[in-house]
Image (cartoon, rainbow, N blue to C red; front, side, top):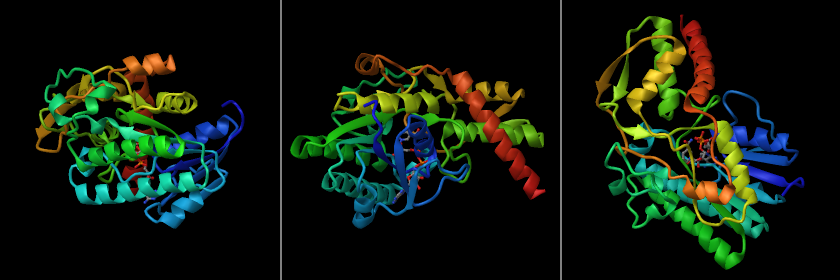
Length: 327
Ligand code: NAD
C-alpha cells in the first residue's frame, strides 16, 4: 500500500472529503474528487475534480473509471437539525449515491472501496442515558437506528459486505463518531454541534452578547474526534485487512454544556446558557475503541481542547468576515 495509487474521493467538495484529498496528495497519490459542489472554503488539491451528481448511474460510472481505490464519502447529510427533519430526501438521495457508486466501482474493477458509515447506525434503545455505555461494533444489531440517515448507512454497510462476498471487491467500512475541524460547514443549517458551538460563541464574543442558545438541557453527551485523527484512521483502515465495520472516534464523553464551556474558555469569554427546545438526537453516545486499537494498533490522539482551539480560530475568522460584510 505504500506505492502510488489512483484514488477517487467522493464528496470531495465536503468537509472530510476535502481534507482527505489534501492528505492523499501529500502521500504522493493521484487523486480525483467528485461532488455536486466545489469545496467552499479553500481550493481543492485534487488532480481531477468532477462536478457530478452521483444519484445518476452514468456519473458514478464515469467517476470510478480508471481508479484503484475509492473513498466513498458523498452523502446528503448535516447535523441533528438537518437529519431529524429530512428523512425521505436523505434516504432517497443517499441510497442512490451509494448503490450507484459501489456498482460503478465494481464494473470498473476498483480493488478497494472504503465506505464512510456513522455512529448513527446504533440502536436508539442503547443510547437513552447520558452516562451511556460506549458502543461496540456488534451493538448495531438488533437494528433500530433513530433516523432514516442511520438506516441507510446500515443498508449500505450490508451492501458493501455482499459486494465483497459476491464480487470480490475489497470493502472497508468505518463508523465515524462526530468528526470536526476547520473548513467544515459552520452555518446555514447543516452544521454539526462543535461548529455550531464555535459559531455561537464567536458571534456572542464579537457582538457583546452575554449568553448562547443550547438545544435541550445540554446534558446530552457525545464524543468528538478531530479531523487529522480521522484522516490518519481512515487511511490505516483502507490499508488493513479488516472487512467488518469499525468505530472511528474519540472515547472521551462530554455533555453539550461542557462543550460550550470548553469553547467559551478558548474564546476567552464567560457566557450564560439559554436552554431552548431543539432536536437533540439520542441522549448519550460514545465510541468503544477496543476493536479500533486491536485492528489498527492505533487510536485518535488529538485532545478535544486542542482540536476545538484549531477549529474555533478558523470559525471566529469566518464570523468576523461575515460581521464585517453585513455592517
Ligand atoms: P459533508 O456534507 O461536508 O460532505 C458530503 C459531500 O457529499 C458534500 O460536499 C455534498 O455536496 C456531497 N454530495 C451530496 N450529494 C451528492 C451527490 N448526489 N453527488 C455527489 N456528491 C454529493 O459531510 P462530511 O462531514 O464531510 O461527511 C463525509 C461522510 O462521512 C458522509 O458520508 C457522512 O455521512 C459521513 N459521516 C460524517 C460524520 C461527521 O461527523 N462529519 C459522522 C458520521 C458519518
